[in-house]
Length: 64
Image 1 (cartoon, rainbow, N blue to C red):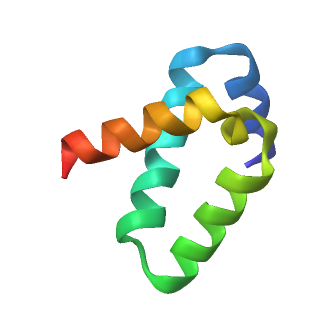
Image 2 (image 1 turned 30 degrees about the horizontal axis):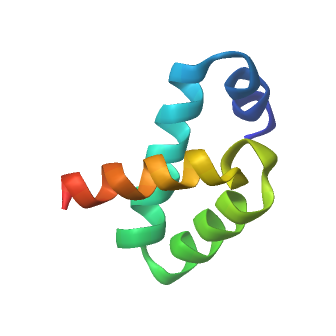
């Protein structure tokens, strides 16, 4: 996970893909997957900014 986060810091496409994956797990994963995904999304600076959060929520709404 650490290597992916380092890569995400440098590449917007990777950051978006990871964020979408985590958002999907937070919404539709097992209870443990939800817990871990929500924790990462809340705590990691790459995913905790408000503009990124709104973009993810909008994308999830469109996919649902």
